[in-house]
Length: 404
Image 1 (cartoon, rainbow, N blue to C red):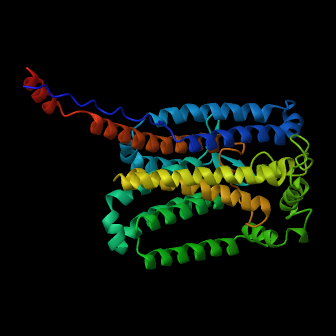
Image 2 (cartoon, rainbow, N blue to C red):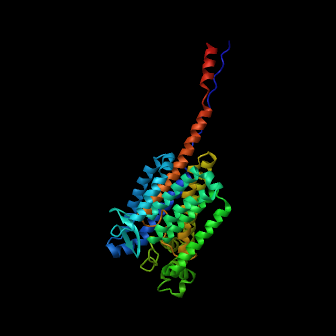
Image 3 (tube, helix red, strand yellow):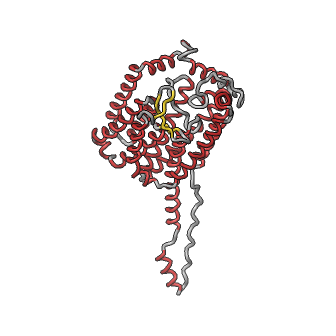
């Protein structure tokens, strides 16, 4: 009997464990952010603390903490995060209540948004953004059919989110509540909610936001200032006019790193909310377009990962990836729009770039979860390819017996 030659299994292709475009955009944004925080804060840090590198060193520490927290988060499977979602939301609500307790919450410029943890002041709204995404991603999986077929399934999470927004407005933190509600609405739309329900809720949210702006003097002042900052350039319009001057001075190529003028006690919050204006002055249109491109790449890769998870039948991972991409993209859009004077002033940081411990750490954790989704998808693809390339054990045994 002639021996049957054993088939040599095809060697599986070597696949990357991480998305290079996503990782590259994250590293570039964080690195450029650290450089710009150092440039924007040198003079104010020297004036306030006698140490020019005070804010830059703290930002470096925050990045280290964020990377450490991200590594821990990356090591936890996506399935575990799905189970933790409701509990994290309850913990976030407890923190929102706790920050309003006198003696616990820390106030800055009339807003009580922080809890002093010693090393870092925790801005409660930052982790709450991630907690809402985790909760809503799980809810859309558990109650997906109910959300798509009945108004009740759509209304339940909206009641919870309304409570979150109400507690944020008590701080007050109008910007964070707007980002959370907009992200949640977009996730509900992706989840398949009926169009008329989505339109009705969107209308109600817009009307509520408009009512809040009209009935609050300082919010109304921000709206009118945004429409014409030059009407009062030395008072209510000071911050925006200085940001516009900084962007205008940058022209095409910028005045050069460290050579900006507006950061020299002219532009308030130059290392936090208005970091983009300082960057535009020192790196010009080219630098601004580079930052915008990096955010576009980050959001696009998040959506691609979400779509892959959707195709692979992993709805929670898909909703989580969509939520993270929507949140970071929307917040970056608002921050850049505020700096350019096309949106009303909001106290929102530029993700991964602006100075702030809570923002950096939470962004690192959120992106670690996105990378975890991508990692599990790639690992599953590699395992499937290996199974296809692996010979049938029973067939091999038969061929061996035939040879003998």
